Amino acid sequence: MDKFHNIFTQENITFALSVFASIGTLGTWICSFYKNRKHLHSELNAYRPNPHGLLIHMQFSNKSTLPLSINEIAVLIDDKEFPACKIPQKVKEESTRVGKEIRSHHDYFSMDFPINLPPLCGSSGYIYFSSSKENFPPLSNTVELIIRTNRGRAIRKTFALKNLLN
Image 1 (cartoon, rainbow, N blue to C red):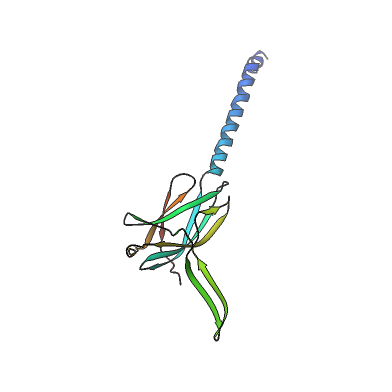
Image 2 (cartoon, rainbow, N blue to C red; image 1 turned 30 degrees about the horizontal axis):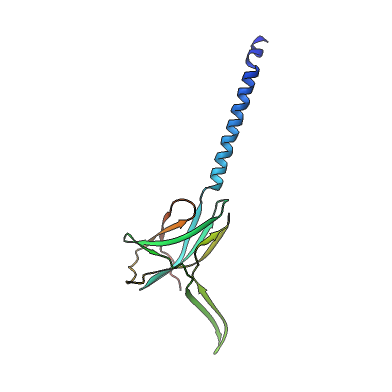
């Protein structure tokens, strides 16, 4: 019984409680960091090159519990950056006709910047990269994008060019 009283002294109980509290605090910090870190998922759905630029359809998902803003996207070809047009531009139009009569008409525009993504949400749309001074360089089977956000360093991702936009 004397051993029992020697182990469970007030100092040892205080020490054990402080160790348990520190472990709980550390666990909370790790969970908070994991949930709030920048976690942007992006997918290139389709593309269409032309002599003066590149049109892509992209999908973005913010998998963080904090909002995220994409300020700029650039395509990197031969160590040269071609930034996306920040002002929306008409990139595609569709019309449905019955005979000579137009039943419906829809214009598609590129995404405007910044692209604001609320927590745990996503967005998709067209992004147009242009080369105003020279012809746009030819593409290989992959394209590398640099995505700059309001949280941390720029993200460099390489995407395979699979689906051609019609």
